[in-house]
Length: 158
Image 1 (cartoon, helix red, strand yellow):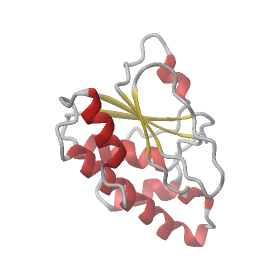
Image 2: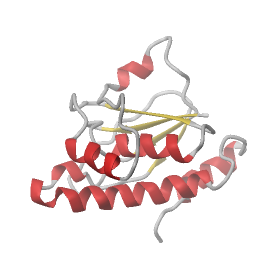
Image 3: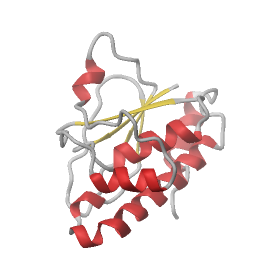
């Protein structure tokens, strides 16, 4: 199962979730990330947090979603957007027929530098909880209705 995680800048939240899904799934899914207006580099706070928590950061880069629209790109089964609402971000829309879900997380890259460690830790915690909850079920074998329902509720706070 291929999962594409989208946000606007592809420098923080989408990168975090890409890493988490790949590492927590033990190869059951392959996650990618991209942005509609990529920042061009992964946020240093995101890289630091991932490294401090033992995640592999080799090869992570901020990229445009155009990469995944190319003819030779992997076909996506699921698209998860992670844009927040506080800054009135516009989430990118992915055309086509993959299953879609929105896991809104406020942008830790938008806070002042002195507040970044806490903001990144919060975003990481939310995304880790949701990724772990999603992967607690055999998402790669769920039927469409069950997958759609599980994507919507996995790890969500009431």
